[in-house]
Length: 302
Image (cartoon, rainbow, N blue to C red):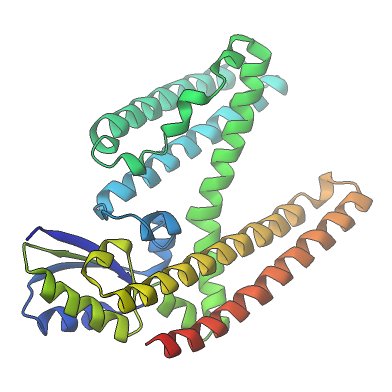
């Protein structure tokens, strides 16, 4: 018998607690509203397919780091703009000092995360590919500034997309789906002490019967037939998340084109808006079809 930690998507906390109490299992349950779960990336394929589910605080640290680097990106770009536009000297110095201080703080926070957290949860570090990065490019000052600028823009756009834009899109889309999207993104983390595997199997079976999507950490306790259903639901959830993120990217691109319409040539703007609108509409239709199809499939697999 070993302690268990896993999570369930698509069910309310009271439904999960009822399944646990039916087997007499005391558990620590943590539920998060879907928009916050989207911000922390709790419903993505990466966490769904992890054999060992990490605590929420470990996942949240990646968001805190992203937010810190995003603020640093804003200051970095503002500093570059201040020097290019030859603004007042005191303003350039102030921006430069603030950028350096914040970036150093972000680097120390990232190093702390990697040393204290990622060693215990290596799959969450996201730093495995850094060893193969061509760091020699930073030996050329012009290339270093260009690479840093591109990296900061990507970091900033990533933060805006996941922390601000996707939750907004989710709220709007949830109204169009009459609450179906909210139901699909409910998140409940389950932590149980040392209990017999047989009792956890009954809990997992009950959660599947209720329509829940179980993380991979439940697979060890399921029968072959239940495992097949659980894997199928995880794939459907990952597909839904993929279409949802693509919808957010397309709609964010439309918003950026609208805000910057004064700085884009009319011909280029028209073509860009047409392509972005067509892409967003296609993804929206596929997403709505996926929701309808998954609802029928869940009923068939239950």
